[in-house]
Amino acid sequence: MKDIIKRKDIILILVVLIVAAIGFGVKFLFAEKGGTVTISVDGKTYGTYSLNENKTINVDDHNKVVIKDGVVHMEDADCPDKLCIKQGQIDSNGQKIVCLPNKTIVEVSSEKESDYDVKVK
Image (tube, rainbow, N blue to C red; front, top):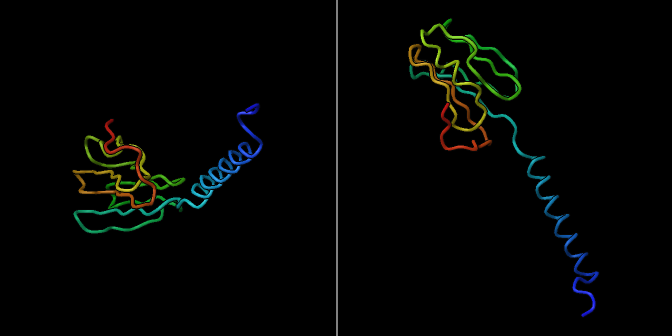
């Protein structure tokens, strides 16, 4: 009972830590980045775009949607209150930007899940 932790115990702990580190590394290395953005106008699909490709989309001369670095945001809109612009950037599955006056919806579909159920600004 001289040594509480023996050499084999230390080796076992190191092996478990290495296996756990490899598991987390593989998860982050192979995690899907990006996804798709679907823009709908008046209930009809306007277009579907990749989050991995930087792009600016002018939607019916009413809204300007920008996809850059894996996130999407509404850069410009001709609606009076500009709430769609204030909704900020989205990149997680199910997140939406809605412009009610122009009947435009921008929605993300991806493997990345949001950290929140609801986000209030």
